[in-house]
Image 1 (cartoon, one colour):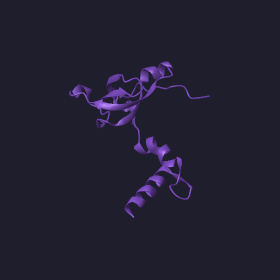
Image 2 (spheres, one colour):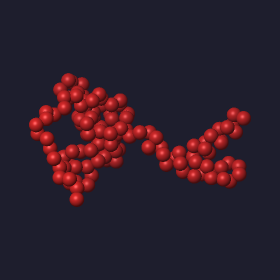
Image 3 (cartoon, helix red, strand yellow):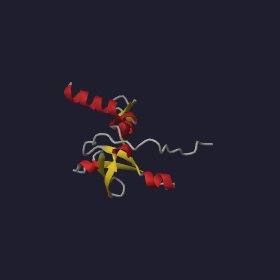
Image 4 (tube, one colour):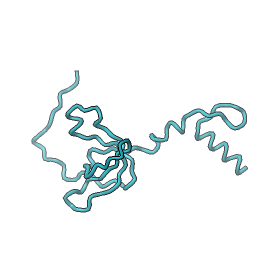
Length: 121
């Protein structure tokens, strides 16, 4: 059985929610309201598209939901996790492909290197 949700009301909310993420960064966004309500679609893949300009909204970013194309304004960075490009590209880097010559299986990265080595040899 999982632990019940515990909220510490004695500690104040954090003041520094972190620096703004660069525009174009791919992130996972967890909508805390949907998550706490038990909705299934609480986590979304998004891209950072803007940062609010005033000091009252520091530590927030505006997002574009990649599935719905919906704009999500002024999201606290505490609810964002940056998607590492290596994770996004992992399947391409590890997918087996036929080599150009011998027919042995190579990863996509290996096949790319083999093809380009040939062009420059």
